[in-house]
Length: 454
Image 1 (cartoon, rainbow, N blue to C red):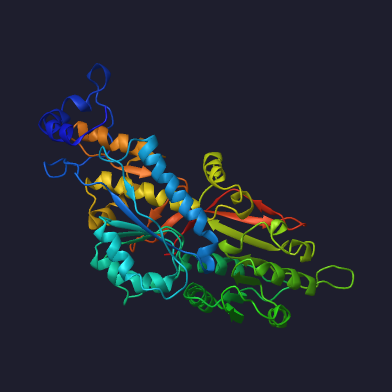
Image 2 (cartoon, one colour; image 1 turned 90 degrees about the vertical axis):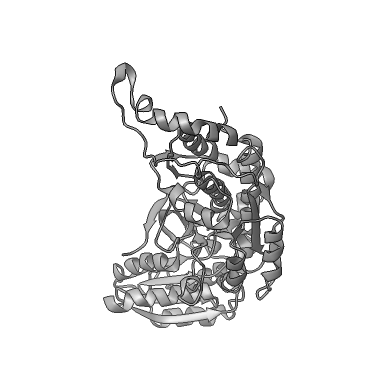
């Protein structure tokens, strides 16, 4: 039976009275383990009359632009699933407002946020850059919108002078986590054909995210006798003189190269590999390269693939946040655009799960208010009953409510199991690592876990 506002209220008395006797008994009167519950009250057992209205803001430039369509499609597919497949939320359809896409940095999002709030939005899903999110935060807080960000990772968003009012949740691993992963590899590396253990060459687009990664990296390396031996920044998408950049990296060969940019890194990595070869085409200098999620693509299918040397990315590893890509998720994306097969699915799992998480937070809190949603978001990831889609999770919660109880769920969605930390940044989760063949084709491996350092 689908639980309704009326059945919740009517079931309060009988459910509470019966909870301590009948529901605790198994066959033959034996007591059985019960899921974690909390005592119900009349106030918590009333579903809201208002629908859940969700805003969304993306961007068509920089690293955000590379994932924009995938994120937008995944969010919309989650809306379709919740409404058409699972009958909506609180006996009515959720409302996903028209997506606002920033076309250039520096846009004032204040009027956009006001318009969303006036349309009834109490939450918003964002995939914009750190500077834009920080600039929009006062308007978001004033409107009391719960914010689920699927893409930012820079620590500037979490600085003390950015007041989020505990409304912001971020799903991607932040740069503190990424820096710890890179530093561990660098400190454990080094050798005869590379720099000493702990030495890092750093190349990045000049963004708040890139600067944050470098800052966090030095915080880990320096106390451990590591060092950034070279650092280079360039304008977004414009890597400049590739030969000069290769020369600077090889002037002091590192134990690890971190290249934090987009697909412009393909020609750079090709030139770097070529520059390390001797006359017999064997490498004189060898060190691993790590590249960012938005550079993790199939270079054999990219424009200019014929200009890349063989094994250009043979020593390179990339990653994308999220768990294993299920056949269901891939087919969902490909049904909307076959080009995803070539371009990949980066951040689409986060987009899908962001919408489902907001719906589950509303079900958990029995509220669509932004502050209630933000408070509930961490809770629906770590409850007692694991569930893998909106309907399974909702059924667990509503079945308990029919009995006058409250059940907690642990949603394990498209991106895999995720836990949030004290600031509601991703604390523990999964990511996919990628490598490349001799012909520069992308190869995936099993997902691996990440966890925030202590």
